[in-house]
Amino acid sequence: MSKFTIPDKVLYVCVGSKCGKRGGKDMYKLAKSYIKHYHGREELEVIETECTDRCKYAPVCSIQPGNTWLKEYHPKEVLKLMDLIE
Image (cartoon, rainbow, N blue to C red; front, top):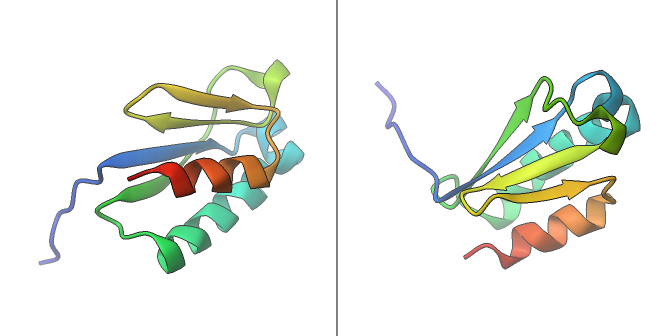
């Protein structure tokens, strides 16, 4: 049985219809790859969500806890925010 880990922070990336078309799917893949190389799973986990119901601001992602939201983001903004997580 594998170990059940609880991360300190979670990045939720919307990959729903509009967010997915506007970069959400690519951001999810990039963020997963990024944490694999620069962060541990205990520190930060990336989870894709189907819809956050904020389609007019697509793409959207959120870091919890802390209730930090990014809308209409560029991938560099998300990666920079991920680097600030301690």
